[in-house]
Image 1 (spheres, rainbow over the protein chains, first blue to last red):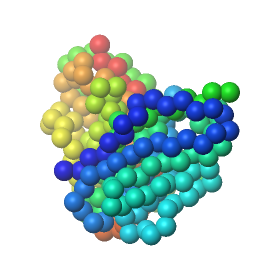
Image 2 (image 1 turned 90 degrees about the horizontal axis):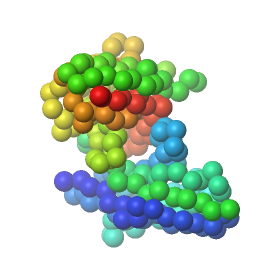
Image 3 (image 1 turned 30 degrees about the horizontal axis):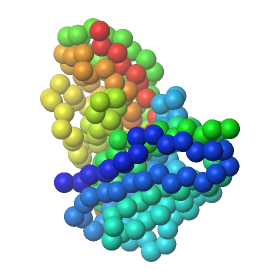
Image 4 (image 1 turned 60 degrees about the vertical axis):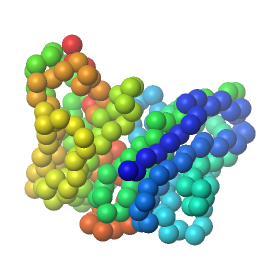
Length: 115
Length: 116
């Protein structure tokens, strides 16, 4: 069965510092994608970054980078230079290619950025 | 391009009633997925529709159903509401085609359902 595990229910980071949010996944499929979403208190899910299982390089999108370690089945999100607006829930998700658009989500990490 | 829209944004119902939620995907997107988010269970996949056909279904009772129209708009229906159905219901649209490796799902703002 596919599963996403986020072991940090809550995290604090000082403004302008970097922070790493952990995500491990479990699947026996070879073709899959890993996503990170941000959910502010308004509720909308905002796509941040994607990593495909066959991608050899780690994905980066602006201040976001994904530290993909396939052998360890981990896909940690790194946010550089944290901003106050980064305070939100962060979800790691996985999609297995042969299961259509179904996303499996982790339990989330609540990030608080301190001024 | 307009984003994913969901109506209504908030809904209050009583136990035993039924409810219909609507989702309009981004123009050109043919895949629509629905998710339920609760504090206890987190985000759970309900079902996915592609070109008016249900492609995938999560582990929810038959009280939860959905459909997709020819213009890709989708509705989900919950019959005989229970207190535990109180949740944020999120809809996501994607340009996903069968067998494709990458799909970015764009989420709507959600419908917050409260069952009293």
